[in-house]
Length: 541
Image 1: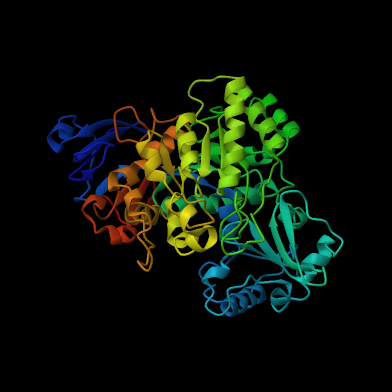
Image 2 (image 1 turned 120 degrees about the vertical axis):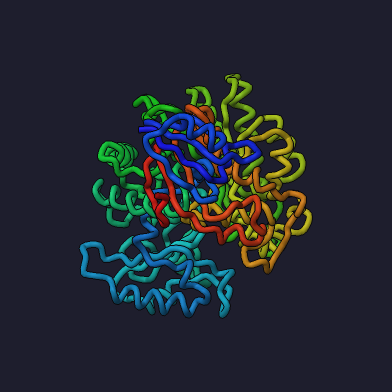
């Protein structure tokens, strides 16, 4: 059935705005003026009532399964204004948990830098106050650090003699005993001992996450899911996605950023036919995803020079240069796209070295390899990124918090050449946007506001490097067609144009005419996937 949407403010991917579009069989077949639209004689018409419409939002780097897990856990982001509040909320939450075969008390989202009473991380003694007989695990907002109580240490067999794995660190007290904090690869000492969810549980978490994303206007994501539950195989995760697709419950298109950290597992993955682009329009395999370092907030991002606020540390490198060369070289030779998490400049050096080496050994056109985050950068690295024509998976929403800490963490000099996503855009690189959810909420309009203002959402900090601000159009494109380009889908989604998938988002107000400091406040009224509503806050009929 042909459906005409008219009397709207429709961003097709180019300006000026038009007023109408038509969908049929899950595709756009027309975009233009109202009179032109009515000339098609459509069976159904919808008055948009001057609402703004754009292509469905695409979060180009997040963790969908982990988001579902966070939604099913204690929300420490909204109950963590202080360490005392966090512990009180977590205690109430734990007391209200039903009896379950899973004894673990889980939470996510705390950030010690935002505590009003003490700027320290919670430790085992704090969490022992929450429970002494049930294990407690709470993950920092960045996902690169977690804290556990004494019961969890006992269950996991962690003692003063437990060595930290390569690329990880165990927090210790002055007597050498673990303090309950685990960083990056050391987190696996805990996560590998958590109860293993079955496929039905995974599907439930994915459904929960998809419904939440639709409320933010999101129709597509590029998601890193294989490492959420270390004991769950990638085959099981893929089966869960495909079964949701077959049952019509996958309300978000998913491109899997496939996380593997050892060559045998990656080789088996490719031998099973899992190459970039394989799959369907609802679930497909994307790039190899690697993490080369940690986070700035946890001081585990790997820097060339020590942290300005902790001269004893340069952070953590997850891989050696040789390991990175091996993994990236193999993936590149197999025809996979590659996306590597790199926040610190030393980590970025290693990644660029490996990518240059792979390209020299096996020249390939249009690889679309990319850097996820690309935060702390030096001028020479910006030039190398340009020469390699890399894709940039940015998270402008990170500015909301990072503005408050970046100069203290890395010093004024390094801060002055960092978060330079607009510079890279001017250099011809494609910059897509995302949230790294559940690191941040998948709030696209908040991300757009940070991109345009280069300031915190509350306006209490910034603008930081104001010359790096995106225009509203650039910000919208970073969440639509640029995300589609990252997954080689820019010819089929990311625009409202004939032949493109009919994924679109309806907003109450026109962002081009909204105070940049109020962009985050624009309500999402409706989200459509394949021409069908997957979220309706307000009837369009």
